[in-house]
Image (cartoon, rainbow, N blue to C red; front, side, top):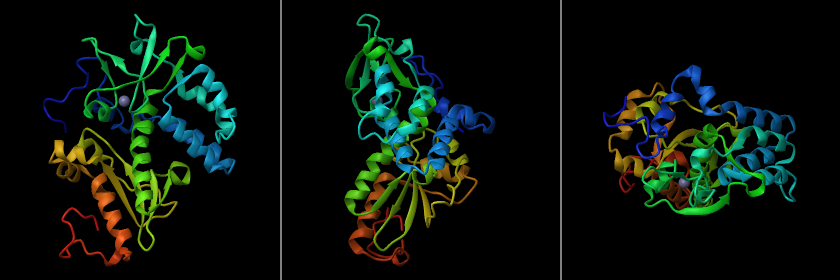
Length: 304
Ligand SMILES: [Zn+2]
């Protein structure tokens, strides 16, 4: 299932690795406990009852953009002008908890956030700083973002780990991809149906896609979870998107995913492939069914 050099604990921070968390949600009986699913279901349920999809999206965007809040922000954000968080304010206290001491710079009595993902950086045994989001340290040196005094705003609060891992991290990728697809000319709705799936993408004369971003370390563990999302809101095809870099690092990622998947859907594509195909669909304005993947002139990596 995993390569021999894979680790469950990170050497420099003594923290569980991403692979460790992927393994934790692999077992069905522990998936709910480690995935944070319960918290998001409570939010979805309440927004559904109140017929308030904007609140669901606002909550999810907050988790993506602000994994760190001060205690004061926790209390004031829902009531702020223009906030759609509305009646979800009390639920914030379930998902943000006092920042763990492991992240604290004991000399400066402060926490430092990551410039890219805005989560809290972790001091390493070598005196450096480390971000738990793989894409941040893969991008090169981890960059320092905002610094919080330990007692700032009544204390620093950090989004709980399952939601950082399974909502914030893919959410960052989903938000970026949604913006890029919108720029190209697609119609994109993030987290439709109160989070039934990542985004619903429609093209002027083409298909409706259900898209989820899945940046997993293990193609085998990801493959084992392959299943189409709920059919509502409806879609024509469903895709799981991985960063193109994942295929560069592990050329057999797709083959291993295919070997372990129990279902033919969703299709696995990279973010680059999806964007390239979206550009072509919009430029050509052709119906989706007319695009033959084997047709001459189509880029070999094209999706449809
Ligand atoms: Zn980061």
